[in-house]
Image 1 (tube, rainbow, N blue to C red):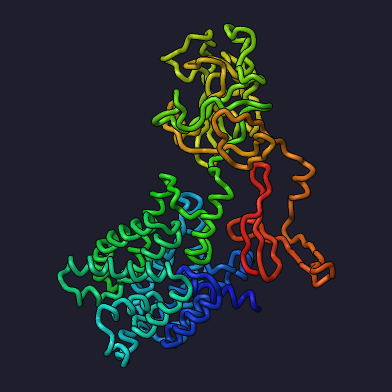
Image 2 (image 1 turned 60 degrees about the horizontal axis):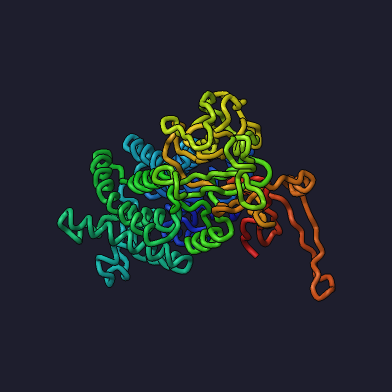
Length: 579
């Protein structure tokens, strides 16, 4: 019962990007100021939740409120417009279930194809449909359900503050000072960053709006300005890492929202439909998508319960995991030396700054034996080159000759090369293979560690070496992007995901399959440990393996969660939630 209770009230807190069912309970209690709205909202959530359980949706995916906050918003919007009766109840239940279905479908499509959240788009679509249909439902529609009596508090609140509080209250369809003030207090006690963003976003957007329309009173009277609050919160504190640059982006988003808000109001007003959260959705999703395309480091990869926790998690992980998500295995076996790294002084400049060159040296640091006049004198020549990723070979050139020492090919700079597309969204290019040694062809699928060919001296190569770079596109010579190497040893120290330094001698670490099997935990697997304190048993720790909605595994003790995972042969503990 407690799990169901949490799942339902998490829907309320998710609307404000807050986490925790206790906050949801408080928000629900505030909606009781208008029972018609409160009943419609909770009924829509219950309908969506029960339908999800009826179709046997995994309970784990319903815990966060992600799938049910859109049905909640639809229910609140119907409760704001229609008087509760038998027909209205039928409409709320149907709309709640349909919104859940739409949320699940759009959520999958948006994430799979665009890597975007759906925010409140399902709510906008379904509520707009309901409002359009209301013109034909004479038995349901009640214009001006509430007399909107001005409370005593509002008489003493200046219009510029009343406008802000009413807009904040309008997020849950309660556009009044008291509700907005209570919502603001909850935000303040939960996150100071969200509080400042809510205030700053509202006044930035409303002041611009006031200057454009020529009336401050009219601008502050527009409760649809809650879109400015949501834009600022989403961009400044939720989906981006809180920072001065992030706040600038949030304000730019708010400014863009001022134009969208008025255009949406003009478009929908002919049908008697409010703007809802359409400006918020369009602005936020557009900016998040663009930042994703340019692979901005400002995007929050792990969104926590508050912006403060997200920032703390980000700063901690920057130190713990200095590598990139574009992670490669080393393209060789044995010990090799870093001859040229990022921003190398010879050829790793400009668009090709993100690249590595590797050679083999002896105890004296020399790359060759004898006098080094012959290619066969070089330790790296004809050594195996291995695939650093699993992916599809998209292009191969293998016919360029290996040039004698002292000669370079300035026309065919890359010599013989292979380009592999990694499904994670990037391309890996490896150059200077021995002529006709490449054993893969265009269209082949290769696994990490697969044999590609032999290290050679083709192209613009002063001596035999392996050149490797990561690109955003598949064309040879395309501009490079940052990456890192996984699972290597340097000076008896293991690096899980890192960038080796210039002249470092490194070698790949190989997976211990027996240990890997022991660290492969199964869902619902249970462990019991005796807790010792001062040498005496003081209790028992019971852990169960669970999976979060994003696919991350964790140990659940009932009071807390310890998140873990394996990546490129390394076992990680990511974070701890709870006690």
